[in-house]
Image 1 (cartoon, rainbow, N blue to C red):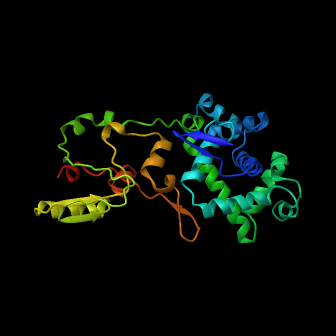
Image 2 (image 1 turned 180 degrees about the vertical axis):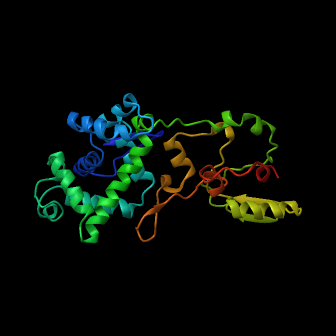
Length: 294
């Protein structure tokens, strides 16, 4: 089985049975709610919202991980291009352990394959992992929940509508400011996969983040020829903003989920020209005007 996603064609990193198990896990974390469950949400949760719009919320309650047409291909893409072979192999072993038999009994207290269990039983198993005394079960729960949430949040079309989230083009908010800005003109060179490159310069600065930018600017103002190298790409204003998936894949390491060395979590590390100063600026409180124009 192969997928074509984000202009790339690639094989499924998991076997067919492993894949079915993974998708059943995803649908357990993010299920399509039944009519009684939806009615309960409407009666108990809706009154608590400040500006409820049931017509926006209800379609999200009907969806699930696998009802999202982009979920499965992006999940496969994520493991193919953003996850190390070692991590993928460990996930595959866990999925094998849930395919039935004595290993499945250790995790689920039943020898029936996890994917063949009814939703209620699958949910109880996940809750048992989450609240388990033994750390390995909690770790398994967090791993599958993390991958499922990361992929679903970026691919769901119903979720942004439900929470009334409207991506805004920053160029429309400050078109005059951008037009008036006299941005420095840089010359960019894409070295691609070349192993050797010969360039004449006085100084090479590795990394275009906040630290590298300051060093490069001071050296250039001192009259030196400065070359700043970065493994990330530069995107012009007209290429921004990007969709959730495009931004994750083009601006961040490992699609926005760079795993910690000890496996205890992941971080969002930049992989683009400007480094953290590019991807983190928008999450800060707005800086006062004179500090931005000084």
